[in-house]
Length: 435
Ligand SMILES: [Mg+2]
Image (cartoon, rainbow, N blue to C red):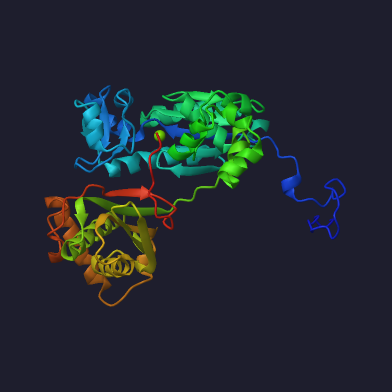
């Protein structure tokens, strides 16, 4: 067999054509790719409506009931009033006073999210779970056997008939175009952007439809007279680079429908997390410690319910200016409250800027595994396990707050308990629902 050609930097300047034969894959013409983007429509709202069909067709806000809560998701009926996610609930209720505030069924959201993930995982050759309700599928190569578009249509129908959740998708040649196209397909629809049609498809859309173009960039673009993606693609790239740096070049390529990013395969690795936005910013250490204990007990309880142990714990703090920091540490696999609480406190003290008020706090367990408990035996494991199982039985019978350690009694009601499937503990951000 001939050895594979290896790309080496040419010792003297030669043209790319002279170098032919030893050029790296990046210089090869890229094969036509087929990337599908699936996104559940108003996911949290759809789940709430499945649980309570009387909510269907009403303006709904999913989010915390407290004064300081923000809209995590809203129904299409609510959007007609100008409501959008991340808007304070208070503002939303001013725009639409008869809207119903629902939510916090985080366990339910994860359950449905997992269900959809399983359906996709069962048949998709390669997929990425981009958020709790959003998936990219790389179907490249399938075209030799099936029509990728017909295949994605069938998959969508399967998801809808199994879960009863509305979902939209788009098929295109890259992630960016398929994501933008899915937004255009909503609600409950689908779009195919055939190869070669990317730029034409994007041209009439507003620049802020490009993922990552935030309010600030959009403002500057408008001032520059750049409204549509066509306007953007017609700008000299140098101008964009001068104004926005490397990001400008990126945008210029995106406006032409060029985007190379790959579908990153999904591996099941769950984490269990909870977080709480306080009614008012807190500095009271006694309160904060009590809250930390209570939250850790909550996730540990969930962990035991899943018959899992955790190998990693993280604590997150958000200050009133929205600066968010988190810190994590690996631990011997455990599902015991006392061990997890000790670690959570340790992390908190390393993380916390003393005296600064805290707006939000969170605890997350990850590296969950079912087997490890057998390998980390210590003397009284058996008795301790029995004790915890007994406590959990009481919790189940009398409600989760029936048994709280002394330090946890002062804490407020939980508002964001939930299990999330996430591979990205290292990131401080949470899984978010994209509309
Ligand atoms: Mg969505």
